[in-house]
Image (cartoon, rainbow, N blue to C red; front, side, top):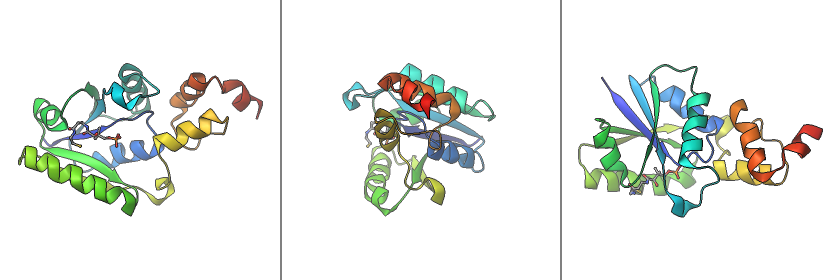
Length: 166
Ligand code: PNS
């Protein structure tokens, strides 16, 4: 069985992430979404909250598991008995960082390869950070994150009332 790990912060999961998860299932039999538990990144959501949101957003998909991890990605990949990491590439600006990370992970463990999926054009501009910024200012984020995530983001910023008025 080909098992791929799709790692990230997912703070919160966006439609861009969901698209990568769905398309990863065409090349892997099972996809494990690895949610980085790293408080130094000062996330809006705890890793438990992020795991739950991803589980809900992927509940229509078979063969997707969501697992929080700490420490090195290569250790998590090995622990999950996998050899492939999937990452999405939105634009050329992502490339340098992603290339470095992929080469670094391969240097740490030569059994681990990273597979890149280019993001669909409609999600090329999308990121968790931009979604949070829009929500913080009371903008409409329904086009950016799954329905089960929308109110959870507004709740964090206590901006739900404003969205409901629109
Ligand atoms: O969604 P993100 O924040 O772009 O994901 C980055 C992530 C989680 C894939 C990356 O930071 C990571 O793998 N962190 C784990 C620590 C690690 O292995 N670092 C060395 C490779 S960068």
